[in-house]
Image (tube, rainbow, N blue to C red; front, side):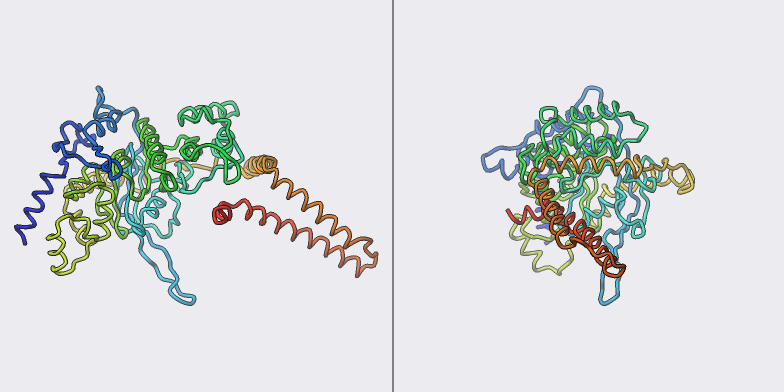
Length: 490
């Protein structure tokens, strides 16, 4: 059994693995790294005999500082480090009872300039960890330390970073420029003049490559608008208005076709080369997308099973015949023995004493050099943090909300009015139903009595119906224009 396993691992190294060496700046040059001419295949490309070669990796790294002459990146991004993060939530355990459930367990990670992907099977905690990093979870259930450039993150950290949610947040009836202007009006400080905001919006449109469709409506289920890739970039642009030091994205490729997803990730890669720290969760990407990642964090049941350079994950798992590394990673994490192509190895595993695949992965990672390198870096950052006084030391300035209540109400009112006027059907229903309801109420309460008892009661009834009508009608409009209603009806 031992000799067969050693022979199996030897064949893996000779046939498929890509041994890489780690430097202070990341993976070495692809020409040195790639040893085997039989390189990785994308399943869709392999069907037509297309192989990924050294040129593919070189194109990915041409702006990283590894393939350039000066050996430096375009900018220096912020470093976000997580130290022994635990996350608990309360779940119902019966009538009027609740218990704590641990979602994340002792996770440490360092995210630097570049693209960092968080992967894992469904229920692994990748979205929860992303929300914890972005400060979007209840701090009462979070244990551990989050540091930005070696300093504790401010209380309202989410105000200074960008977070692109999975679902669209743009208004379909507004143009790309108007959506960006809306974000700028609410998120830029009041000290920023109107002309400066316009210039900021113009610059973001240019950076996103949306100049051609800047004055085109984004579109929705009823209005034809921009393409899927342009729409996703528009969502990203809503966050880039504030020039965040860290940009978070929750599964940015969900709902996009393969070509559009690749376009969006290529844009994020170019953005990271300008000094951005980009962190995102993603589920089972194609290899053409996976090769764009700088760093990879793999989670299984809320525990880290790999954290390091994305390309070195291939060497860590040492696959034999993997067509798509992300698929293989998730197969291994899920304990799917079919991920191995050696039938005898599968039979041996079935006959052996059952051991949790999750425990094997966790134990293997803890003993690996990748974990040792991470712990060394994390301990160095945390030691410097404690030497400066810990929580009592130098902190980032607390970020206040950029706009007050009055400004927020005014901006939202203008956007709602603009949205109403650009929806003829909705505007017609609103005006028509209001007039009809007014006529009905007028006829019912025509010539009210002047007596103190009947007249007072009747007038109370008028006010009650008017208030109830306004409440139900507002909710009705939200339901009609809701994305869930439109999607389920199509």
